[in-house]
Length: 110
Image 1 (cartoon, rainbow, N blue to C red):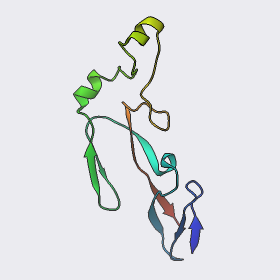
Image 2: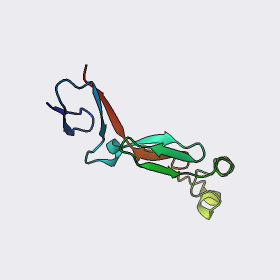
Image 3: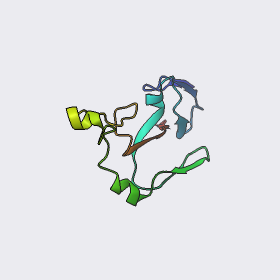
């Protein structure tokens, strides 16, 4: 059977009597293909396709610089005018406290 995911609008096929499946989000937009995850120290992702991805700053470093989300902090623009430029990702979340990872869609066919 051919079905369409309502969020990413991607088409996928499945056998009529399977119980569930996992799809890799694959649309034309990065906002729909990836999800926001809060960063708490070093991280490891074990993806369903077998890939393992690691990264992230140590927890102590993240806690020490956690309050410095303003990119203009300490500059002349910040001192003289109070300008504020947050470090944001494509979905508007703070890039210092959130990271983006590949989205996997779980489908149940009951």
